[in-house]
Image 1 (cartoon, rainbow, N blue to C red):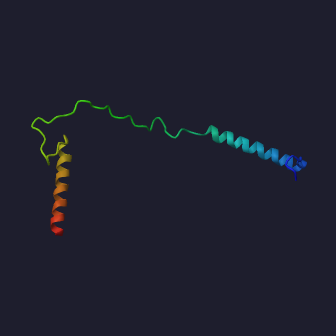
Image 2 (image 1 turned 120 degrees about the vertical axis):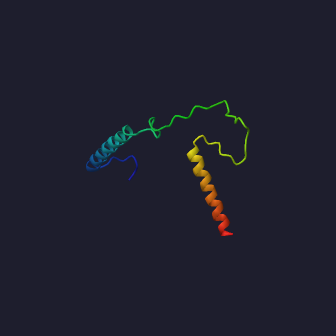
Image 3 (image 1 turned 180 degrees about the vertical axis):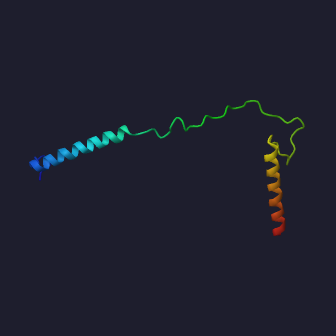
Length: 90
């Protein structure tokens, strides 16, 4: 077999059929492609605030400046529990 030699009629028919089915499959797959990033799933970024929030009485180390007092209280209790655990391990 030389590369340019014609195929027997049975093989030529099989080749043409295979070429047609592969071409159609490629067209279907390409048509079904979706972008990697869907527009609906992308979160809008928060608007950047350029004016910093300054505390009235100044910065105090160890003070929790979280406006949600419940969340701040939970964090403080968790910190106390971990400190107690560390103290108990010693």
